[in-house]
Structure formats: C-alpha cells, structure tokens
Image 1: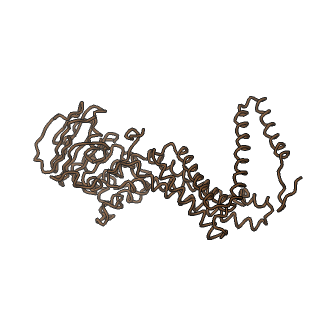
Image 2: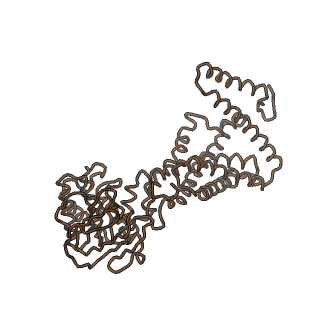
Image 3: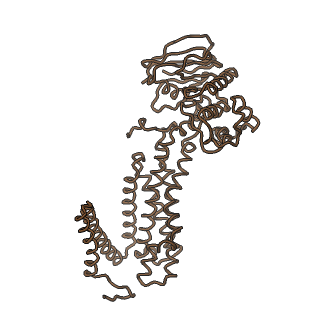
Length: 269
Length: 213
C-alpha cells in the first residue's frame, strides 16, 4: 500500500493492472460464450485509460499554472463540446440550432458555476481551478443531458401533435401559444433525471461527489454540504438551461407567418 | 400543386369544393387561411388585401377547421373557450356557460355537459365540439375540410345544421367534401389538375370575397 498526504491510498500501476484483470476476465468469458462484446469492451477500457489519464495530467498542469484565462478557456471548451454532443443527441431538432444551444449552455454553465464558487463556496481567488473546473464539469455535463432530453422531446412532441398545433394556429394562436403544451412537457422531461436522482440520493446511492470526498478522507457531514449544493446547482442549471434552449429554438419549426412546418414542408428535410 | 386557382365567396354563401384525392383541396383551404408555407397569390377579405392584416388576425376571421379535429387536454368548457385564451382575442368577451350549453344543445350534445373530459368524447362528438369551438368565435369565413367525412348520419346532420346556421347569420363557408351534395351549397366547384372549374352553379353577389391565384 502506498500512503500519501491527506490519508488517500494511492492507486499505483499494480493496482491498475489488477483492476484491468477484471475486464480481461469478462473478455475471456465473452469470447468463450460468443457474446460479441469483446471488441466494445476493449475499446471502452482503452478509452477510459487514455481519457482519464489525459484529464489527470491536464488538470495537474492547469492547477500548476493557476491562470484565470486558462480556466475560462477550459470552461468555454467544455461548453463547446457539450453543445456539439447535445446537437448529436437531438435528431428530431431542426438544423442550425447550434448557436442557441451554445448560448443556453454557456449562460447556465458560467452563471451557475460562478454563483456557486463565488457566492456560496466563496473560493479565493475566484477562478481557483480545483473548485471551478470540477463544479463547472458537473453543471455543464448534467445540464447537457437535461437540455438534450428537453429539446428532443419538444421537437418530437410538436411532430406528434401536428394536428393540435394546426388546429390552434388556425384559431389564431401564435407559435408560442401553439407550442406551449409541447414546451411544458419537454421541460418536465428534461428535469426528470435530475429530480429522480435528487429523490434517490442518500437512500439508493451515495452521490458521486460525496463518495469521492469521503474516499479522499473528508468528514461525511462536510461532504454532505457539498453534495447538497451540487445537486441543487445541477437542478437549477438543468431547468434554466432547458428553458433558455427551448425558448430560443421552438420558433425554428414555424414560418415567419407562424405556420408549423410539418415533416415534408421543411427546407432541411 | 395548385396554379392559377381563383375563387370568390359571398357573405352568407356556402361553396363546396370537390375533386379526386390528392388534387390539392386541403392545400387550397390552407392557403385561404394563410396556413400554407411558401404559398403565393392574392388574398382579399372584403376589399382588404391579406398583407394589411396580421396573420393571426386573418386566421381569426378566415377560420379553418382542419380535417382531423384536434381537441386539447381538459374538459369541454376549456376546449370551447380555448380561442379566448389566445392573445389575438385578448379582452374580447368570452361566451358564458349558458351560451356554451345552448351551443352544445344546438348540435345535439346537450347530454355531455361542459365538465366532460374531452378525452372521453366519441369521434362524432369531438367533430361537433371542434366545429362549435370555431363557429363560436364568429369568423367572417369558415373553411371546413371534410367536416362530415368520418361521421355517422346523426353527427353529419348536426354539422350540416350548424354550417347552415352559420351561413344564415352572414358567414361565408367553403367546404371540401367527398360526399354527394347535401343541398346546402350554392355552388359546387371541381378541383382537378390544379384548376378549379364550376361543377354546378348558383348565383350570389360577391359582398365578401377571396381570391387566390
């Protein structure tokens, strides 16, 4: 066992190799039973190694440099990547919504992260990377999932309810009024994973951040405080991000005259 | 799909448009209600060109009842009052419960009541509630896309009665129909090959007109 400062037991190359043996064992079983998951499993394992090791070294470097511009740049990069993934996950959404998605992610990512680090945790200096980057990662990653669900749901729902949308528009409804039902449902759909994990936290599982702090030797009650802040922050970011993304994009499925573009009427399909 | 089609309808007149399926009847009605993206042509209400009237306002006055009547979640009352929840009718007086009940009775729906959940209505009841919803807003022109296509005889008769009552109060009606004539329409026009031709004519003075070309 390798002891390190702060009471954390360090995982060395031998421990990593041992952990990898589990995956190798599963791989052997998969080959024997012809389960066909060997290749995926191997690729996933290699990715885990490469991506997380890279992350570790990058973070160590960033923490060493300790520059506000570098921190802001990393946050911006996270938002960009999240926006790209988000678009890929919303096949029913119209094209050309990248800017809207980026704005909603950037707005919530920066706003919520710095509200937490600046007002609640009060880190000094304000850009302290070991606080700002992990918290931003949780805010952006979780709100990305919520926003993707909300967007996909809204555009799928508008298509599914095209008769109702047409009837409403024919009665004089604006696009906002005609989409309102779909927007409401989409917001709820985007928030459900967050609300579910809030409801199950502490009963079904120990949330990831709290587990990490406890493993790192923190007092469980101290870790609780952080976890509560993180969960509320994720819920707020998801709700805020979804609202902004939905409001910025719903209009794209309508003509300037307010007519819903059904499948087959769309220039991009 | 449509090219060079032109039609004018007078106040109080009922015009039927017939034609083979796929000939563009629904498209034509949607163009009249300004619900057709990328349509071009000239639309007049009275003597006012469409460009002078905001689209939502136009659709209040030239109201389309789509082929598939769609009610929203909620009870019958909420559905009938839905048009008055829209911004375009903000501040206009909404009908009282008594007026709504009377309207329901006029189409043989006195038994369902205003508190009935719209999800529990039959196809024929949905069609009548949806038609009431639009006629209660008293548009100038009513566009009906196959109003009685999927209906039993009693429901179809109620729909015809309501349509006639609307026209008698001075509303203009354009109907797309498949069925044989029910004797309501002053004119029957045949839409075929993108052209509109007289199938059988009556006479009326064009006090209110619409033209699409």
